[in-house]
Structure formats: structure tokens, C-alpha cells
Length: 229
Ligand SMILES: *Cc1c(COP(=O)(O)O)cnc(C)c1O
Image 1: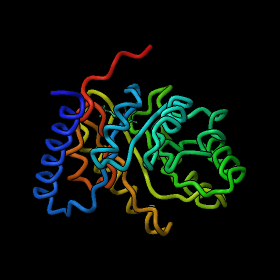
Image 2: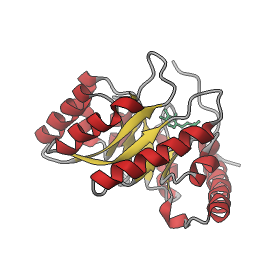
Image 3: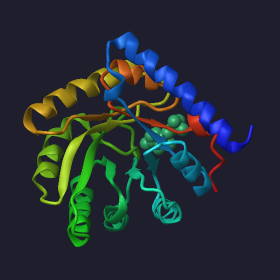
Image 4: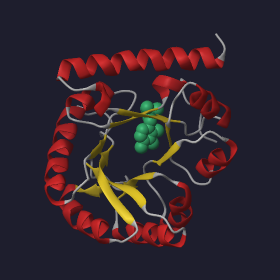
């Protein structure tokens, strides 16, 4: 199989698993938005994905994300995932279609200024950290409401929902369950904040069970990631 055939086969297998997870949870497939996480994979893979009909891709590093976006002519939605340094927020705010990792007031304000400078409004998700170990991205649950309040008031950001990465080595179910409850509370206060970005290659079927709307899938579609430089 060439690269295109391999990726096509993986996409088909994932599609089947998503459909089965929906069937088990009584959910409609149309509620699920897979994002193919292309970080560390070459731009040629992104073009193959686009040719195969993928419309949402995810990256987690600037300027890698910006370079790939410039190299791939097809119109795609670019999701910026995970930790983001404040000094890169202005650049990311120019090209990202959605930022999944808003986790502190300073970052929110920088993204807002960047979006204002680019004359656009930017869809954002608040990343919640359930592990609470130093150095992980994400806001602790206890500070989530305050941050949501700020993001929803910044004029160039649109608060669209929540995101989380299940902590390594523990059962993801309680975490996804709590994320769904947090999302429910958020939606009571903020209109249109109905996105739950949860589930990766190793746990996406469980995330579907707990209301995930956006799945972030890398390895299961593109194969084992080349080691980081
Ligand atoms: C890399 C990454 C993913 C995808 O992980 P896979 O295990 O390759 O599916 C999802 N979310 C975030 C935040 C990531 O950094």
C-alpha cells in the first residue's frame, strides 16, 4: 500500500469505530467531528488527507502549523491544540480556526489582541486539567468558571466550549464524565459553548460515550509519530 492507501484504510477503520461508538451510546454520527492531528507529520500527509475529504486538522506547535498551512493549498480548518506560549498567541490568532488550549487569563488576552490585530474573531475552547501536576497545560477545575467569564467577555474571542486530555495512566471515564458536566454548566451560562473536545487515539470511543463532539486523532490515522527532533 502507498501512503494514500494506508491513510484511506485507517480513516475508514476509524470511521467504523466512531459509528459503532455512536450506536452503543445512542448518539448521531453527525454530532461527531473528528480532527486529524497532523503534528510532526509532513505537509504531504496533510495534502493526502485533504484529497481524501478530511476538513479538520490539528497542530500543536507554532511555526510548524503556520508553515504547513502555507504549504497546503486546500481549504482546511486548522485547530491549534494544547499548550500555547503567550508570546506566540498573536501569531496563532492570525491563522488558527479554533484554539483548544486556552488555560489562563494572560493567554486569553493575548489571543484577543492578536485576533483584533488580524481583524477577525477567534473560536476558543477552555482546556481543563484534571491531573493537576505542575507543567501540564489546562486550568484547574476550580478556576474554570472565572476564566470562562473572562473569555466570554473578550470582544474578539468566541467561547465555544471545553477541551481536556485524559491524564496518562488512569481510567479516562471519570475525567470525561466530569468534563461533560462542566460543559453542561458552561452551556447554561454561555450560548453556543457546546463543543466538547475530548478523546484521542487511545480513548476516543470512551469520549463518545461522554458527549464528546470533537475527537483529536493522530496515530490511529497517520501511524506512529516520527520521534520529536
Ligand atoms: C498529539 C495530540 C493528540 C493526538 O494524539 P494521538 O494519540 O496521536 O491520537 C490529541 N490532542 C492533543 C492535545 C495532542 O497534543
